[in-house]
Length: 65
Image (cartoon, rainbow, N blue to C red; front, side, top):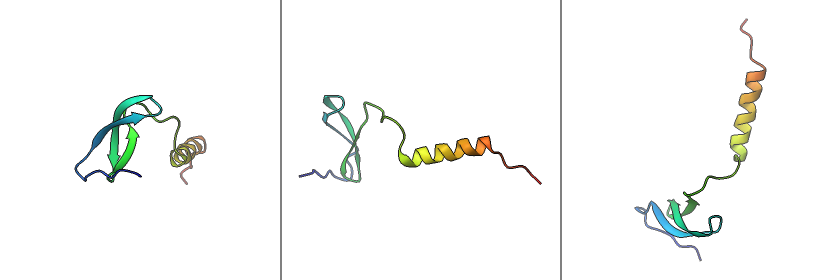
């Protein structure tokens, strides 16, 4: 059963399976969020899509007429 936190709760100390110790986790919408001790690995699908689009735009600039 998941625990719901109050609206005023911003961070809690819980066990992180990645860090293998108790760390500070963010609370998002009254539910437990990600660990604040380590960075996520890689980019999300949306971030990858934006990154690819930006690279393509840099490689193929539009010419003014």
